[in-house]
Image 1: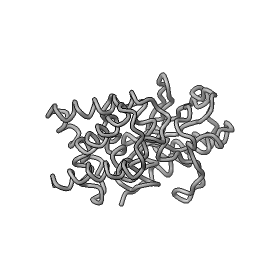
Image 2 (image 1 turned 180 degrees about the vertical axis):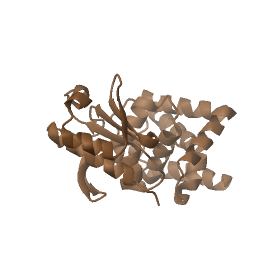
Image 3 (image 1 turned 60 degrees about the vertical axis):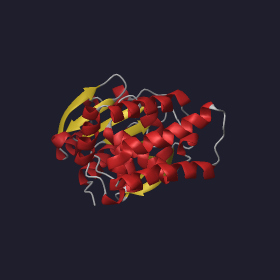
Image 4 (image 1 turned 90 degrees about the vertical axis):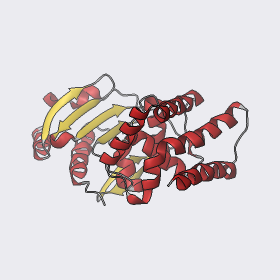
Length: 253
């Protein structure tokens, strides 16, 4: 239900650049666009986020001064505006606020990416677990609507997902604290609802989109509580916890 044509064009450019620098075999599409366009079709996402799973710092490789003529033409064709260097990533900005970002990262799951076909392009794409691990590890404290919604869908589809992430429990606790703050501060809660509507969530997931905060709170509180008591939850028990959290969403609606 979403038009990802601009993202497809950016991906062609990204793969060309990665191939020129011999990084195509260790670089994968991740982030919200990977989740939305390949895995779930649950919301709209604009950016192309490329994660290079290598110890090599790739940030300086992509400076405009190093572009060849073919790549410059590709960028012009898709509305290139400017280039930005951030402390941990490189960013290309296009018209209508589309962005393409390149980051060097460490693996946070056992199998961080796989080869797939998306938009008729063969490419590497990060696993759902790898994407969610990054969202929690790096952005648990921010409370971005898109991240929280993505995490909620991941839990709904695989209640055992948190056990598959190579991240400390403290990061999941930080996420719970963020959820608690949003839930208790009306202004922040209203901002979440406003931002999630801008993403045009798929009607199939509308119940979770509108109730992500309470849903994740309920699930993660039980998950962390068990961990702190030294209880190893079986998959069947995690399914029951998720079922209960989701039933509260349904009852509310």
